[in-house]
Structures are given as structure tokens and as C-alpha cells.
Image 1 (cartoon, rainbow, N blue to C red):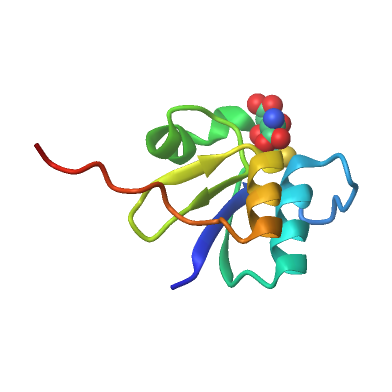
Image 2 (cartoon, rainbow, N blue to C red):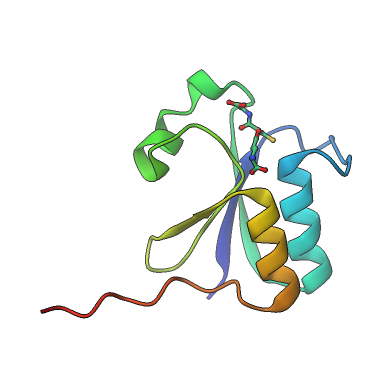
Length: 93
Ligand SMILES: N[C@@H](CCC(=O)N[C@@H](CS)C(=O)NCC(=O)O)C(=O)O
């Protein structure tokens, strides 16, 4: 199943230092299958991001199990080394 890449709507900004582009480019280059979810460019207009991640910044990856991975550099690194997977479930005690 594809992951979801949540990013800002500035899809025209294809500069190396732009966090959302850094993450999306890495997923593209690694051949990762993903669904794009666009959010407002204005951080105070992202209540859905806050609800899901507890903070306002994008990009982040959403896995099938609902867990999320923040930080463009981490997303890019994991896409590149093939470890873009959800964290292991914590066993019930
Ligand atoms: N360190 C973060 C920075 C993310 C970031 O600044 N994202 C921009 C959109 S590309 C954002 O959400 N800006 C709104 C803000 O700074 O609150 C990362 O690399 O993922």
C-alpha cells in the first residue's frame, strides 16, 4: 500500500532547500509509491496537520497504520536507504 506524503501547496518550489520538495524529490528518485496530500502554505491554516501530528509543519509521511514520520531530511534519508516503513508496533503487556 502506498504511503501518503503530506506537503505544502507550493508544488512549483523545486529548490533543493525547500523541505517539501526535498522529501518529494527523494521519494520520486527512490521510486516510492505515494499519494500526495496538499495542505495550505499558511501554517496557521493547517488544523488538520496539528490534529494528526501535534505540530504545524509539513512535510510528513503517513503510513497505513496512521503513524507519521516528520522532517524532510529523515524522510529523504529513509527513502534513499529503503527504510521508509512504520515504526514497529509496541507489544501489548
Ligand atoms: N525542518 C523541517 C522544516 C519544515 C518546514 O519548514 N516546512 C515548511 C513548508 S515546506 C513549513 O511547514 N513552514 C511553515 C512553518 O515554518 O511553520 C523539515 O525539514 O521538514
